Picture 1 (cartoon, rainbow, N blue to C red):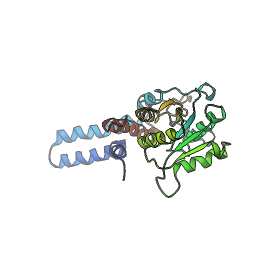
Picture 2 (spheres, one colour):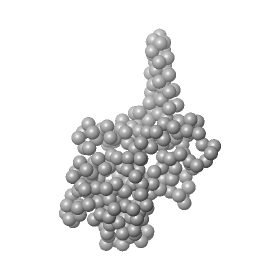
Picture 3 (cartoon, rainbow, N blue to C red):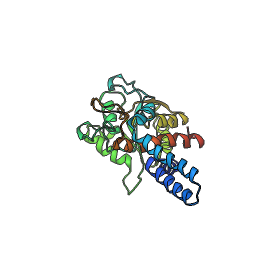
Picture 4 (cartoon, rainbow, N blue to C red):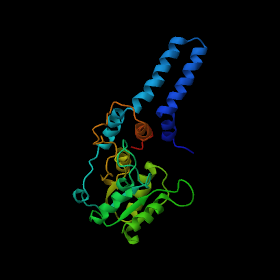
Amino acid sequence: MPSVSSMLTSLIVPINLSVALLVLAAVLALLRWRRLAATVLVLALSWSLAWSLPATSLALGGALERTYAFLPPGQVQQADAIVVLGGHTAGNRANWFEPIDPAKRVTRIGRAAELYHAGRAPRIVLSGGALEGDVSEAQGMAHSLKQMGVPDAALVLENASRNTYENAERTEEHLRGQNIRTVLVVTSALHMPRAMAAFRKQGIAATAAPAAPQIVRPEDPAFSPWWPDERTMDASRSIIKEYAGLLVYWLRGWV
């Protein structure tokens, strides 16, 4: 069953909300409530237009990504373990406003491997249950990390969590059982504020070690933050998801 934050996100993503408002505007027009129908129509178009502008993503998404600084591996403080959260672990574009380049992809597991090989922590805790099928996200991440030269003995798998709150709750149980006191939390820069709030709520001594920011202004001089762009619409769902998640987690006392 979809989570409350997922349902809220699906409701308010630009296309979905705009279509719903357009239908409402049509109904109001049929009922001859023309002024209200016109207002709803303007809201529908304005919502999609706002989220099609890179400036919106740079402002709102960038605000989340800048909460915790991205540092080179050697500048990240040492800890007892690295905790990697499941979700989009196959990687993503290095910049939301540019085409996907596999050679420049940004991944959580890639960041974790860098930190491990830089000697930031001797163990990596992988947190993520099976959202579909029998293979958990933790198992998938473990397979990839071993291909990156991380030994199996350094990996600890948490295979049951289904969301960020459970990532923190179930990881805390593993940490307590293995006498791990300090951790580096690895997730996307966009997701990091919610992740850190959830981990600290569990009393975990956590330090943020986000993957590289992805909502950054491209170097292309032709890029304009005020010109609608279809890739920006892709980014909007992830940004809205994080704000909706923070709201729902706060209301539920999870952060």
